[in-house]
Image (tube, rainbow, N blue to C red; front, side, top):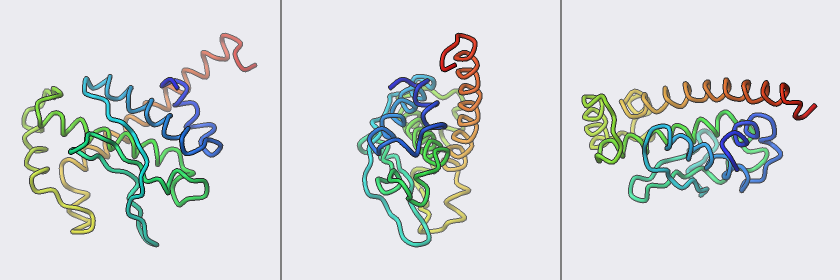
Length: 175
């Protein structure tokens, strides 16, 4: 699946995709984000992650394996967040940004703001989980940066979708 196909499918047909097709779309998005940020792409896989009645871990980046994990339960129809393509795509973007941060700290990816890389390095050393302190978790540098990146990049994807749709109409595709 191409990136262009994936951004259309995630907006228009997400609920009809199988869990495997959803992962394939997310992988195409991750591959494009890695290319854009000149970093190594991460495999996107599903696995059971924390979920209870009040909270759900949607995804995580595992620096030990270099993988992005998406909560398998949230790829199923009717799940708490799985029917919301924006939530799932932003999760993938967010976790991919953590991959970028990790690679920048390790010197694999280049990030021009060296002070920010040092901030990320210190944050990773003293990382606070949501379970430890929800407020501190949200305000730490790596989380704030990943949230901002995911939101902004998703908005750019919306613009890209609009352009793709306009191109399809102008070429008589889908009419």
